[in-house]
Image (cartoon, rainbow, N blue to C red):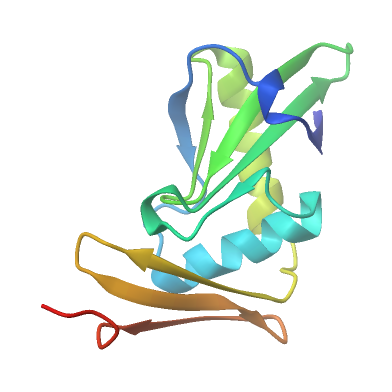
Amino acid sequence: MYQFKKCPIESTKGAFYGLKNIYDEPTELQHSLCLGQLITLFGEPNDLTEDYEYLYTYAISAQDTDGNILYLMVTGNSPMILGEDNEAHNNAAEELAQLIVSTKPSDYDHQCVYEDIPVSIKFGVRNGEPYSESDMSDFDF
């Protein structure tokens, strides 16, 4: 059992690997939902951009019942939990994913650009319901 807290991004030194997708096969709406759930749990992200591929980052400390602390990161492009490749980090990542998925989302609105296509994406949560809208008309081809 872990206690999770947002921490300064500088705390997350070391090699990080993709440990756990928060949703098995995330849909666009789950991308929107996840950030709302993270806002409920930890407040605003450590980093929030308008680039869809590097959308947000949360630095999270996980303290176990013995007082040991390890560090995880949650990134928005999958969304995925990153950490060191060992049993303790994998266990904490699994527990954090379960906590996120079971949390009621906060309402928010955000806009970003996915330049590979290119497309402008507006997404968020309104009245507890996730939404996602995309628009390619803002770009010249």
